[in-house]
Length: 452
Image (cartoon, rainbow, N blue to C red; front, side):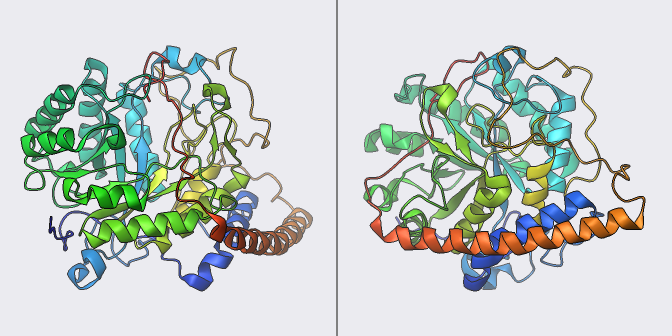
């Protein structure tokens, strides 16, 4: 199927473009800047123009002259809406600073969208299938996105609790409902038309996908993206999709053999059929409390920074952050009790956004205490959210000098460590196996039960 990638339509935000040389140094640079920010020595976090010189959310006037019509690939983030107060008692080592919230809370959604905008996120990739709770959360999120100018991409959860395909009739019915309800809503026009990622497409037959594709009139009304996990898998079914979004949460850009090559090969296969390629970049991963064994350390931001650089290197049509609030798999950037705003700061440095500007205020309906079953993370020390009013350590010239010396030492050490990490990971890539595929492990629904 011969399709054209979007050309100057929809919404594209600014971002930091990282070249071949820059990728070698971006890990220590971002971590050093984050350390300086924590010491109060980084540049002011007051709002600045986006890296493209345009306000966030503006399309470049000459975008059609660039590859794929993009000025910069938009920054996307996987966003989950299944939480209620009971969800936080299941397989969690941390909770949000907003407390054990429910995903239908307008106050919580408003704060999420505000933070996302401050950190440079252009669109949430919102996880959904048609249920009363998820439909209510989706409508509330859409209203808030209209208010603040955030965009949305849909990811449809096509697998059941055992990671088997749900009935294709349900997929078709849900997506027809979504198309009728929101198909013309401008909040979904990131790529000119609503983009729907079908999670778990590898579990559905070609006939199943073709029937749904026909029912929703893709690509005329909706862009239907697969979630295939290798270039070979995508090539076999390229005619069934308008692109691909690989949810690779458990891969480590600094140690998994062939990490960048796998993503580059997928990008090449998707772009060969004129599809959209959404490249993953994960903060970290720990599936042990959810029945898995894989752990990818966050490295205080180095993992996200390396993954972002590799995603950028694949010529993506969007960089898909894993994740905004996946607390079961420990990949979240949402401000939390263990990490404060640390990962929003790192994300903002990558996107060129101002970053978090003020302390969050927990919403009245989201202040429940931490569940007794939740445990503090043992891999990294807790960090409180940065306070805009704090003058800790900055009230004397001696304290300021000490901070500068510490920052200089941190910067020097991170440059060396970051360079060595990147060098070792690149040497290991050639040993990759095309069959070495590790995808996301089982995740819970709003009742704490795994949904895939």
